[in-house]
Image 1 (tube, rainbow, N blue to C red):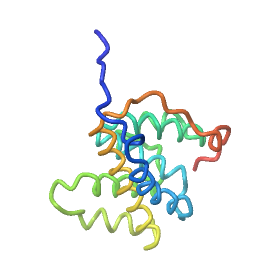
Image 2: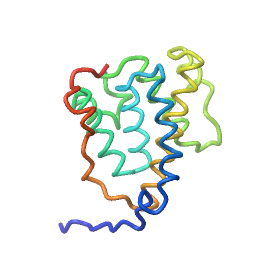
Image 3: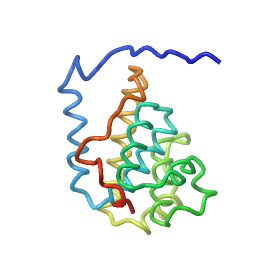
Image 4: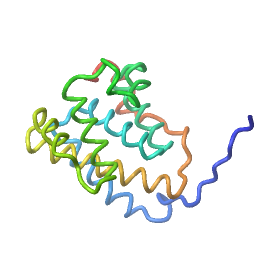
Length: 166
C-alpha cells in the first residue's frame, strides 16, 4: 500500500496570525480553569477522533503522554464506554464531549447533561464546554486547511512532566 500524500491547502498561521491569537485566548482562559490538564487532554483527543483531525490527534496524544497519560488509555479512548480504564468524572466529560461535538439531533440530551452535572460544578461545566468548543474549532480549521500531521513537538514546558496526569 502506497502512503497517501495530503498536501496542506493553506498555512493559516502564516497568513493570519491574529486569527490564531483569537482562538488561543480560549486556551489561556482554560489554562487557569479548574479542569485538570490530563482530563482536557482526553477531551481534546476524543473530539479530534470524532472530527478526524489528524493534526490535533497527533498533538494532543503527544501532550497527554508528556503529562504521563498511559498509552493504553489513549488507545482505548475511541471505545471508552466499554473500557474500565476511566473514572466517573472522565466518563462524564467524554460523554459531554461527544454530545457537544456531534449535535446530530440538534440538542444535547438531558441524561448526558445530568450525568455531567453530577461530576462537575456549574463553573467547571462552562470551562469544559469552552474546551470542547475550542478543540472543535481547531479541528475544523486544521481539517479544512489540511494542516500536516506528525511533526508536532511537545513544548519544552510540557516535556518531562510525565507522571502528572490524573
